Amino acid sequence: MLRPWQFEIHLDKKSDKALYLQIADAIINAVKSRKLTSGNALPGSRQLAGLLNVNRNTVIEALDVLIAEGWLITMDRKGTFIADILPEISINKKAETQVNVAVENHKPHLVFDDGLPDSRLAPMNDLARAYREIFNRKSRWQIMGYSNELGNIEFRKAIVQMLNFKRGMNVSLDEICITRGSQMAMYLAAHCLLSKGDYVIIENPGYKPAWEAFENAGASLLPVNVTKDGLDLDEVENHLERHSVKAIYVTPHHQFPTTVTMSLKKRLKLIELSNQYGFTIIEDDYDNEFHFGQRPILPISSYSNAKNFIYIGTLSKIVAPALRIGYVASSSQNIKKIANHRRIIDVQGDNIMEEAVLHLINEGKIKRHLKKTNLIYKAKRDHFESLCQLYLKDKITFTKPEGGLAFWIVPNKIVDTEKICTELLLKGIKVMTPEKFSFDSPVNGFRLGYASLTEEQMEEGIKALSKYL
Image (tube, rainbow, N blue to C red; front, side, top):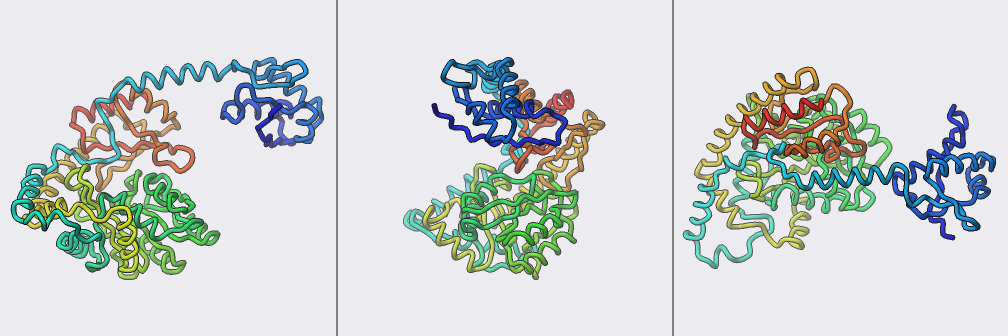
């Protein structure tokens, strides 16, 4: 008779809980976690007693409890098996199926995304006009052939100028690569920097698509908590002392998802640690343009003493999320590796679109668009704050973000975040579950993007959320 499950029951003989109950509960938990399924055979009582180093009578007591409760069945001359019909699982499965079907049948009419811009504000007419002008201005053979794998040279010059003038950096043309969105930049950076067995320190909570890129390159992740002024550097140093860390991934401007800004003290300390231990700082500056204070804080990569950095940004949020244009800036050696890898998966970027966006930059239309939308998003942010104060004041803790397009709210009491998100979805309101940016167990918090919502939608969503907190 096959007994596929390796018994790994850890008994606490100093516990007040009787040993036979510890054994029974361990088997129940194994069934609930699907380690044991209906029809699986258990070892005989004598064998199990030997495996657990307990008296056989203790095992028999545990089995008797499980048989009485319906978790196990016995078959003459064959042994003891997990029951076909289980006392809790059958009920839970039915309820879970009903909930899943109900959720699938409810298409949300209101979505709190993770901080996307309002696509209705995108300068699509200007972009379409610029796109047509590229076709009319150049010969077909000029625009339909292959171009440089690093991106259109004039477009790269414009990005270099923007990074140097607006973000205090000091990069040259051979230190920039244009990509199809920031996620492609992340993937290329990961595969050119990391190897199997390397360690990468990440923020927790944080941005899971980046984690997936690192793991895909063979790296192991070391999570570090986020405090009110950014990454916990004491935890970072603990990891550095125990592991040979290859890189650290940070979102210091507006941390994803908590929106906190890393303090100057921590930025300088992180650079110092990078230079001391030789790891690379992978800086994801995903929404630098959306800042409502006097001016945005300069990237870590702009500091003159930052020797090892990879800086990733995007234009997708400036124009429209569907427009996939990102970029990565680093040393010329890293960019050369990225170019070689990019050539394998994507010979070049969208040369025509890059020229069209460059046209909008040169005409000053991107600058005017950002000025207009920042005023709109600032007003939306202030309205969202007033709604939180009105409906959630005594139920949550939050800090009004100085930039970005989302709020991070933390319930004052521990709540079942998964259940709340499911209940809201049944009402047509979609909220991201904290599991989507948690490394292990889900954090107690919600990231609520507001930029793509109307004032009426914001109020409807906040009022609905308040009923569950």
